[in-house]
Length: 253
Image 1 (tube, rainbow, N blue to C red):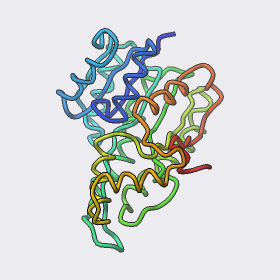
Image 2 (cartoon, one colour; image 1 turned 90 degrees about the vertical axis):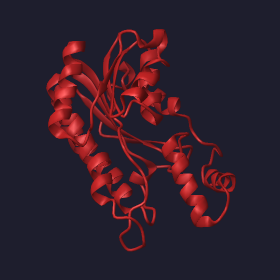
Image 3 (tube, rainbow, N blue to C red; image 1 turned 45 degrees about the vertical axis):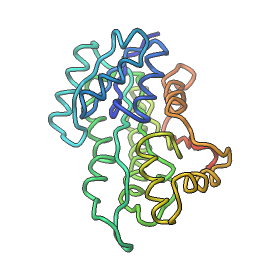
């Protein structure tokens, strides 16, 4: 059965991987993001160049305009079956340790953005649908200097658990995925910062990071996409209120 899916942050990274897997699985996919050119490029990686799919410019931090953009997607598709709240930003934030004050920027995107996306989509989401939010392994544990990022990603997990109870009467499942290191520009930026702090080159920093991953390698965006696709399948209809750590074993609970 073809599902009508919305993926925020779909122009690059994990979002693009999720959208590509869903489109390859035969679903209609709308990708929403701030950069029109990136969205257009991602569509070209879909089967048949994204035929039947849609790119929509929108910003998850802008509540009113986001609601308008989501409504346009729903109108084009005749409703929604799947919402993937993926859009997010990374980077350090100073609190007790030196660093930039990026609290508002990070929390507004990573946590408020998930809330705004879900709020905008719910009037159009069919009973029995799916909501998937992308958290992080840093939604499971803390990292010094990343207070805003860790707080926002922990918040996503709490949001999912509460929303799952709210939507259970409509048979809408709500789950989070907590990725570890994934081959994206965001991850590369994090590794460059790690290399700078450790005073080593990029390759050495990446090797050190992978040493903390039991399977010993970085994941690919399409692997996270495969988990999302499963959560959207009939076999996952009984899975709700969960935070799934897809992280190569970095977290085992």
